[in-house]
Length: 360
Image (cartoon, rainbow, N blue to C red; front, side):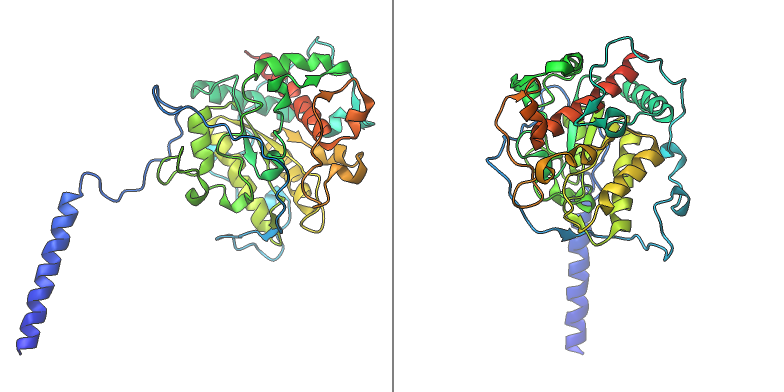
């Protein structure tokens, strides 16, 4: 009997303490932090810049998490086989008339014999959707002259696009691309918080991967990057760390694209040079998604096919680190992985620039 009374008294005391704690914390509470992606407020920390690392840091490909995606047995890459996204993010956004071709000279139409139309395809549907995404972004206050990067270490070895900010380049016959360099000057050498070693497609939205020095509690790295940099354009390079679950990879990249559309940021979907998943399956998925959502494709894989060993270092994943500058007046530059990667990315960005400047 005494034991029961003691138990009852202890229970009442514990309950009182819990209620007091809840009342005391009611203002701060346990509500999930807001993930609204707004530009950095005045006086906040400056956007981070990740320094160039010394070389490749290879690691084994890891299994892609499928999360809560129970793929049907007959799942394919066809858009019809996947549920339609919510109306606010359904691809494509409302189309405007396709832009007229720019009168600016376009320079060479191939890189190592590969047509630029294959490396940077911009069909009318994609061009119209780029205009619509850009218009939405401008209504949200996106910076028309800021870009960001989302990806793994293949965007970090060495500074992807960095020479276009440092001046370590000569454009040669591609001099018409200088206008694009000028427009996004200051963004090329910046990695920000969304380019991380070992990043998988399924960890993009995991707050555990966000840099605590720059990101808010509960904020995933892509939301953090959009808040800090407020970009209008995002280069996306994922897949080198994803293997074994193509349906999961496809689902995860769709999530990235749809988040960009919601935020008024134009995603440029990049393919990769490696075959670390044992095939070219991830690149095929990326191509299909770019076509499905009518967003720009940066098909570097097509140009990598023309390079010795696809431009890859001994680890089979990272590109051989090139000496600078990128001199596109020298034929040797077109046999180097980073030089060709940066040039093809700039070609895609130039095509995008022409489209959005037609409506500015």
